[in-house]
Image (cartoon, rainbow, N blue to C red; front, top):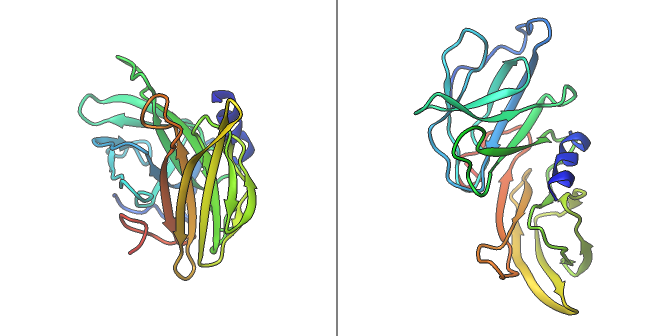
Length: 230
């Protein structure tokens, strides 16, 4: 599964705002990004540009973070403010200028060194427009079901963006030893100009087949607060 998720990056590729007109140093990249982690994360910082002071990353439990700007070489390093140690490294492909960075805690947590696996998605409206649903299957299960009654089969990692309209019902099942079990059921409700990203995570309890989920709703190019809406 880890190999498939790394392939996802290749395939898809609160501080002051840096001027879009300000040129990046030779060899550097300019990236605007948001961050999300499926687990509670605090005390993280990054350095927006060489010579500047570290800035805190504010993460929300059910939505993308505020938008941040970075100009510099890759990887972008995320640091634990308490220990000043690097806990995540993010390499954003050059073709991506607006990114969503997913921080997935390593399990078991290492005693030292990097603590997060990182995944980078192109977060532009060109990749996912309003009125659509994207699903990332990190659950480790083979999932299939229906979206508003239409058949839907998921692969590991990022799946194709699906037009949604304003609302839909999603039901997913998995098959174990020739028996089918419900793994997820939920509704997606979108406001005007909104889109949805559904993260499917491994079951909380060992042996369970009910996946964990995080539903992120935002407006392409807009800034959303906790909960995904203003």
